[in-house]
Structures are given as structure tokens and as C-alpha cells.
Length: 186
Image (cartoon, rainbow, N blue to C red):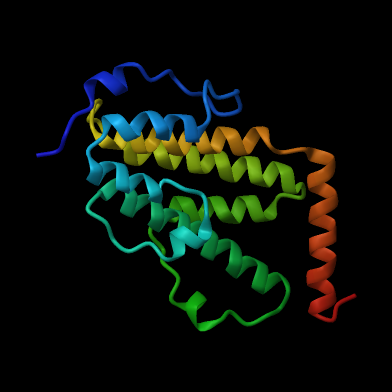
């Protein structure tokens, strides 16, 4: 039977994308360390936006985590494919075996890729992630999925507040120019 975390979850504030979080993800994780079972606490390492962790993630005992990882991989593979097509490069073999877990997630990647403004595209992708989190959380109001969702939302909120438009655009242009140089287009 799944464990319920009534005390911890009843204290959680409501989170809204684009607002400042009431605490950092690390502060929340520290609070969770004392209140979650060891197994559930170990699952928090998969509540990440870090592609290196997600790409190496095996199937876990939590449907929430498995779905989150699959949808994030779907989005990232779709973006990678679109970039390859745009640069007229062949997809690598790994790309050909890309997961297609969620058509909605894949469609979101297509919309973001078509946007002319990189900042708008990143915000759109993060809003898409937020919606994915809410859709896979389920209806158990006091189960571990609520905590997994809370951690991911805190990380998205922190990421959103770290966007600095002028610096981000300059970095994007420099990165894109280096990609084009590598492709022999410049």
C-alpha cells in the first residue's frame, strides 16, 4: 500500500508558474528527508530537469516518475530531431528509437521550435512541463505523487526566475553561431 504524507502535504503552499517560490527546491528536499520513507526520498532524485539524470533513468517503482521521465525524453528527442532537420543533419540511431510517450508533449516541442523568440520558447516548454506534471500527479491528495510534483514545480519556478532575457539572447546567438560554424554554414 502506498504511504500517505498527510502532515507534510497539508502544509504545502499552492504554487503558480511564473511566481517566486516560497522556498528553494533544496530547502524543500531537506524538509522531506525527515518526513519521507527512505524509498520515497530516493525517488526524488528523478524529480529533475537534468537531462543527464533523465537519460540514464531506469524504470522505477513510481508511475509518476516513469511517466515524467518518458515525457521529458519525448520532448527532448522531438526538439533534437527538429534541430537536426533544420540543420539538414541525419538523426543518429538513438534518435531513430526515440520514445513517443505523449503526442501532446511532442506537439508542444513542435510549437516551441517554431517560435522565433528563444525565451518565449523556453517559457512555453516549461508551461508544457507544468501541465504534464499536473496531468500525471493523479488524484491521491496525500500520496508521494504530490511531493514529486511539488519538487518539480519548485524547480520550474526557480528556472523561470533565472531567465535574464538580454543575457539569454546573447548566449543563444553565440551558441547558434557556433553550431552553424560547425555545420559549415557560416
